Image 1: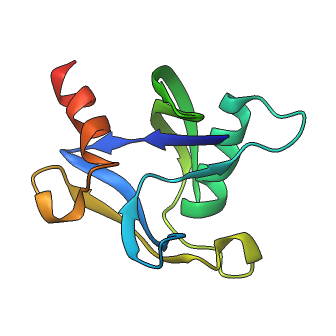
Image 2 (image 1 turned 90 degrees about the horizontal axis):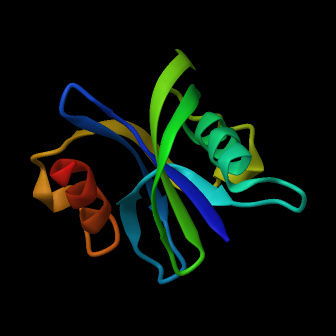
Image 3 (image 1 turned 90 degrees about the vertical axis):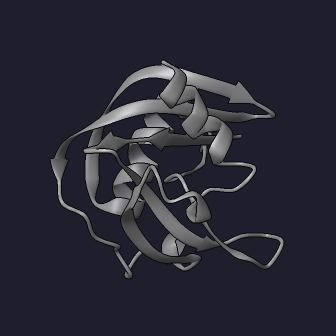
Length: 120
């Protein structure tokens, strides 16, 4: 089970560039695995903080598909940064704000979530 957040500010989306199981390096929404005894919401908040440096507040569940929770969220504190001392971040190359108009950064996994936001 995975929990992730889509966070938009000024027409930009907070994303992490990371290695994935298929061996590619892709842009993805921050998030990760739900630990034992952890709610999907709590996992999302923890994962975003670990991967991006931002504290977030979840506004709503946007999607639940194939064991993946995707929440719409807002930043309430922190600052952008990648904690290289956290071994769980070894697969992350960078964290950045990506323009919603930069179609080259979105793939068949991330584009449908972005489209959900655009249609709301």
